[in-house]
Length: 373
Image: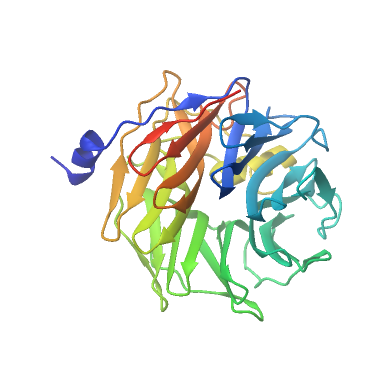
């Protein structure tokens, strides 16, 4: 029996919970055992921003968000009073900030109407945060200095390029990942002075990197998909190399990754539906916003099986998840510690207007349902 299949059969069962109402959760972050946030969207053609909050006992939807039209794809926090969420509204980049009392829209340095999308955000401190995405067909990097968001130069690409994930280990060490219009992976590094492109392993074409997690200067993970399925890359302080991952099938992809140490990291995704026309989730977002990235909305996927993989310091192993009747995707994960992690996503497919949110929690032994109100 293949090792991945054996691990899947012996791993503890996961009980997924669908949040009442429709919508998709794209990412999650926690600042304590009693405070966590998940962000996403409701609807497709005219999406509405979705934010949910964990208060230590249950998840609740946040009402009255502004703007009324928008899609949130990334969330980061340094404290209970400093939380960032990014995405897009119409054809403009969207940045929201939680100050401990309310969510407020912040000015984006991307030109209004530039068909800009911010796909992810990371925060080092109250005065230091990064967000990445695309503006038109070019990579977009913006920085928060404690007073304002400003656009920062990123290395020029020969073809259209999209940055989808960003993570910082310190003020002088951050990573951004994505892919180019030629179907090749893209990795950029911030050294405290400038963003520079870093060589990637030879993993062929039709490759996409979706997320990255920077644990330390010598330990980072990037996840995505290739023509043959899931893709996991590791940074050891010198170079990026490909790491074997359990096979979820040729259509499988990993779109979320988070770690706390050299022996604890999680990656999430699905067995199919994440590699679609236009470049997967990023391509669909671009199509929705009307950018030149994708030729049009992707067709809906079949019944995908959600994936959760765990790194124990030696190998990645698959954790079994009971599959909802309508299938589902896991799109974001946050590892708070070895005994606490959150995973979020949806039933059906992230681009299906009938999808409903899914939230899972790791308590150090098993993934279990989170109370919903």
